[in-house]
Length: 171
Image 1: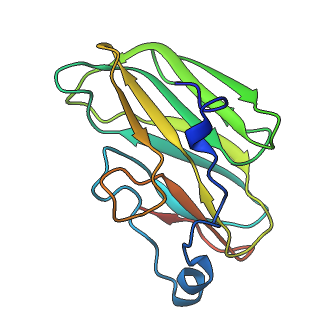
Image 2 (image 1 turned 135 degrees about the vertical axis):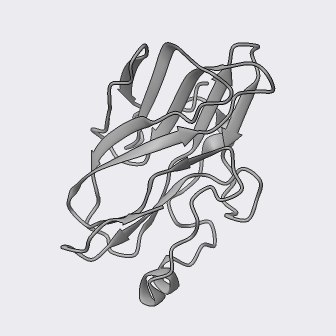
Image 3 (image 1 turned 90 degrees about the vertical axis):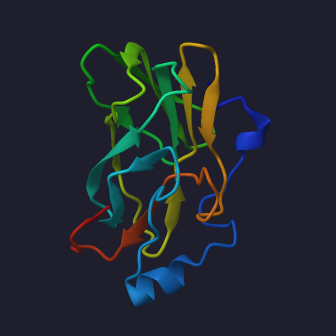
């Protein structure tokens, strides 16, 4: 799952026709992955604060367990968090993003995982950050969350930036 080099993964933050300003004004959060196969546990964080969100694949590929999770974090300097049995790496992609990957583990098909990413939230209130993600299974199949449409079957995980001091919104 090489999100840094995949030409289909050139998703700009917010600029996909999503209306973050309206969301912020109405305090309505998009359901993060409501019908997807992976989601994030936090839907909004305060501008300028350190944030940790967990990406949660909730099934494998048929009967095949998950063996790799990769997330493109739309800021530099992001880090992964420890997950028992897995090894994480974080690599800058040269475009201001960090690719965080977990490998070496095995997540059974009937277990929801939690793969934490920590980063400094940008200061841009109303920004909707997109986190393209790919889950690879033991049988070689990939589940990709690259679609900017939140109503799609596999929407990209997203995070809204709230005014400084706001409490985070969990999903």
